[in-house]
Image 1 (cartoon, helix red, strand yellow):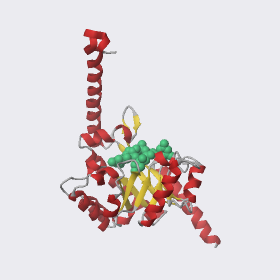
Image 2: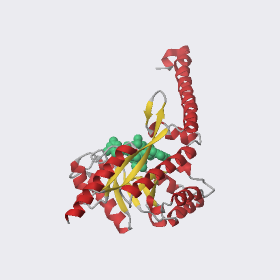
Image 3: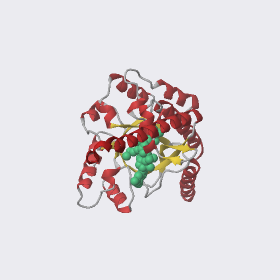
Image 4: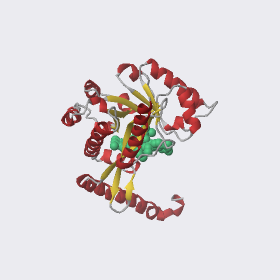
Length: 289
Ligand code: C2E
Ligand code: MG
Ligand code: MG
Ligand code: MG
């Protein structure tokens, strides 16, 4: 269409490109200000033990409290933060905030509580092991490494440098657990599964959401669960939205589930309420014994 406009093609294309570039520049400026002003908050999505319905884990998901646009989801700014090396500072804030709530919840409602924190490839030094900072922070709070699981992607492992391997080993030596996020959607080279010590595979939502009797996703999920268990890993299914999906996952022995069926990601106070009611139910059951 642009070509047919002949001499006008530039006036057709240039402004929108310029506009896009300007918007990005503006967003980058705002994001920088957000980092400086700590305009972020965390939401926590329950991770449910499928066999029992218990909630003793949650994934921390960052949101940007934009002064004019309201709550902005990570899909709209994480990639930009990675490009502009703002992800390091955002990630450090996320980690500390997640650890702070985790300390509180372990002391109040759930001594075994574990928080999952996402750590994207851009947050790993390619030539240097930066694990010491987060490990020291946990020590300072008196939290065991076990209180945190790090969610990484297959892509990180596919291009892993020795420094990245060292970093993951340091985290695990400190007791932290490691999960492969969005499992099955990356390049799925299975060779990293034998080379690296891992704890969880998180089956991507694209598999879970198409689970139905007879669907190929069902065969794939079953195979993932069997493989993971043989490797000594636990499986978390992401994006469970229906009772049928949950039932199929329970039947195949999937360990944990996460999704709108159970709960959307919640503000810390609301999540705390969920934890509290679970805890009271359990305390009540104990007393009846
Ligand atoms: P993720 O780590 O795979 O997180 C799961 C995403 O799926 C979350 O989106 C969650 O709200 C959404 N979700 C959970 N259950 C359901 C469901 O039943 N149905 C549907 N349709 N969606 C569901 P969210 O919060 O928008 O996060 C998107 C992505 O942004 C995350 O994907 C993660 O890769 C990234 N992200 C979020 N927080 C952080 C962070 O603190 N650091 C980094 N590096 N990345 C983050
Ligand atoms: Mg995740
Ligand atoms: Mg995921
Ligand atoms: Mg996902």
